[in-house]
Length: 477
Figure 1: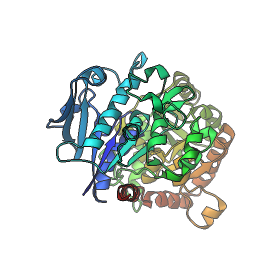
Figure 2 (figure 1 turned 120 degrees about the vertical axis):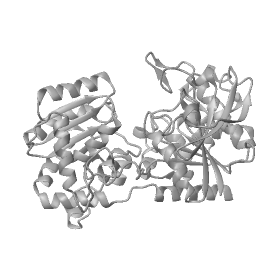
Figure 3 (figure 1 turned 90 degrees about the vertical axis):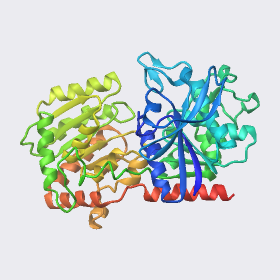
Figure 4 (figure 1 turned 135 degrees about the vertical axis):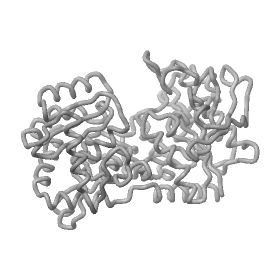
């Protein structure tokens, strides 16, 4: 079995702040069936070493970005983990990137250190294990492929862009502390408008670039999505690949989910019971005449939360309800509370996040709203499809790649699985919700659309095969 080292700042089940962790945690198991043995390197945040069981120290350094470090090999849920134990960098009471006062001031050095350690392991191997490919994820690991290139190491590398909005941008004065060679501070290296960008470094250095959906790969060539790095993406267009994320079928399965009343596409009676329970849990009208929409999201402008106040009124007037779960910007949380105050019994909001509740929401909801301004892949709409919760999505990124919008053509072909709207504004969202009310009124047609979505396969098998094929092509080179 061939070997690949994956390096990232988070991975399920050890640490998670977003979809990046889901992907990093799912890939090792998915790739095993395709002939690739993947080890995952992440920082040893508080609690990580306790979770990975045995701690075989396989590498160490006395002077490592300001302190001692060691690399500990262990296993969690079948995933082999290389935890970078550098307490001066990662043993902190806050989150992976920030605490209550904001981003850590030394994030540049912290994640340069992670990338350095990954590049060393890729170059030298550890004990009897040496990878054929290095796979880096997002800006936090963007320097790993760059270090290999700067050192002249002929080992293929891949970088996956999960979200272009986060670019690892730091002042040029941090160069020495990040161990960056000054001769690579130029437009084809890590320089970005006079600053350092670790994501750009990875984009320019990696042998292959992947994004988490084919459409997002195309979007990143344009200014509105590339956010200043569209030129770098255009320059590397020949090595860019869009590979969709998948859903962990063991976790997201309405037939076996312990958090809900089970049901299946061939027997939807359990979904009706979940709907009734969800209405009660959120304090909504138990006799809600129309569809129950759910929103499970970060509450930010990127997620289109500012579009909802102008769109919900007509939805409620048409008989619909809304149950929302999420947290984020103060203005967005306030806007959601105001909508709930305006429509008591029809709109209810929970601030925060609760994994079990999210499962109950997908099981009980009729519709899931994903009005994002950009969405590299998105897992929310895939969970919705899996649980028969019809997605209403903006025509961007992975949302457009995975949801078949209801149009006269798709209805004639009996292929629609949701409603897709464009442009991303309040008017288009209102029109999409009006369309949903009409579709929902045709109960037989609605049920068929629900069943079509549930029967689609968005598991990891196809995506893992594409990653494996990419690794094979790179290593064969």
